[in-house]
Image (cartoon, rainbow, N blue to C red; front, side, top):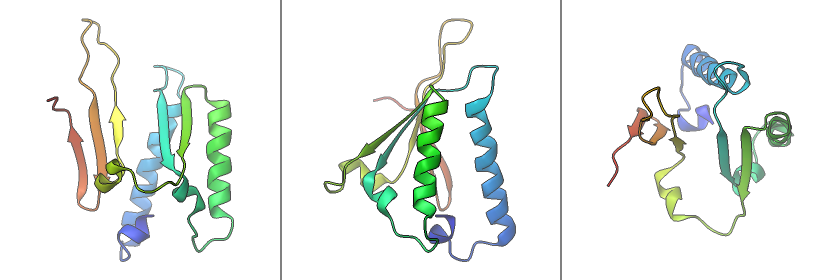
Length: 126
C-alpha cells in the first residue's frame, strides 16, 4: 500500500513507516494499561484486491481473523461490495475515543486520517 501511495518512497522511509505501524500494533497486546478497543470496518473489495504477491491477501485475512479470535477487544467487520459508500470519498480514517480521566471528563472523540502529506486530527464537534 505504501508503494502504491508513493511509488518512489526511499527505502529508509519505507522501513521507518513499517516500524511505526508495528509499534502501534504492540498497544493491542499490552497488559497495562488495558489495551484499547479496536473496531475495524473494511470494504470487501480490500480483501479481494489482486496484488503482486500470490496469497498475500489470504494471509492478511487469516492474520486478522486469528487476531479477532485471540483478542476480545478487537472486532472486524466487512462491508459487502455494493458500490462506494459516501464516506469513501474521504479515504480511510480512524475514530479515536478516550477513556474518562481521573476527574471524570475525557477528551472528545477524534478522527485520525493518514494521507500522502502527513496526518490529520479532527476533534471539532458541530
